[in-house]
Length: 484
Image (cartoon, rainbow, N blue to C red; front, side):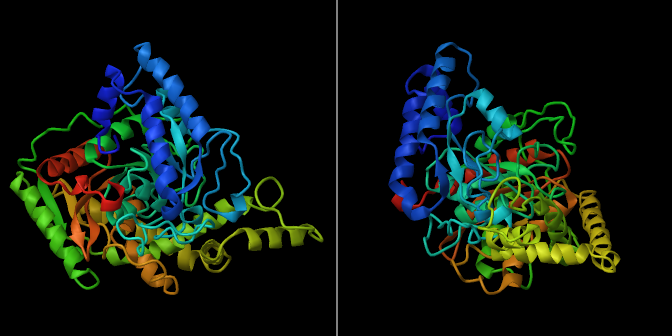
């Protein structure tokens, strides 16, 4: 059953050929069989999943079901889930049971999508490898020596290994698209504000955006339909007419202008990755796309700008974790100051503490103008580059990451090298644009994704491009041999 598309699962559920309980139990059995080695889940919720599946079967029997009713989902452990531990991959929240649901979780619960559990992630979404998790690193299903990417590495791994048909992720600097590329699955970061951030534990509020992680672009389109929409509880949520992200699936790519930035292909890009990406772009040309050269001259300014702005926002967002109201509390504090210091020192991991310190420094008196304000100006320049590029093309294509998945521990002592793994994805977050990663081949025997970036609100177009690409290639159907 785990090799079926979402549409095929839905057809079988609606026809009565299978039940949601059977489908959910199939995935729970696979989790039980494989996850001890993968470490992709922080929490598995079998009782909750089966009870929700029983309710979904009742909706199906009553004819009151939607396309995704009865199809189970795994949530990244950054989405608050009522009555379930929501840890954000941190010791700080190891004992936190969320008292409410994130907006995305609420929407999926209303449809009737059983929750399989919560997936592993970099602590507070800070990382590009899922190695900074308090619960240990998640392994890449394609090669257990490799990382699955981050911070949504657990979600990517469960899709690649067939432990869930759908998973939620969040993307602050590439955290949906980079793990999608490393694990050979499909993932999309929507336009900033298209999906509510209510109930998603904040890392950097002006960057964070939730998105679906699935096997195919078509599956992502159906899932994004379930996730997106206005939420009055999120002040950054966009109040727009409801979009059907499946509406453009099947449209011809004839006449599509594909921008290929000259800056994407040069020093730092693995030659094997370059071959995969150029081959994928040539497939899009065969489908009717027309390649045009564009320029993003400020691409290299994006990473330093991001690593001032995101830590600055993180230092503010994470100030709430003080050992007083919820989360980790140190033993026998001698006073209030000792409580704050030891609770935060003991509760946060090294990467989180590093980013809090960088952010606090950038916001401190005397340095605000020199760092934070200048980084905001660079952010505008990066956004303007995209605006100008889209004057001559419909979408921009290139690599998701400079390399395929690197080995666990390979970059642990070289943080700059780790940060540069997001070289191609971060500019999209600075600009708030939508972007898609689709499987495009293998480099060094590990998956590689094609990055497709569009103007604001072009998700349906991007998903159709991915869908058309997947009609003439089968990379999205490949699965690690041991999980088939």
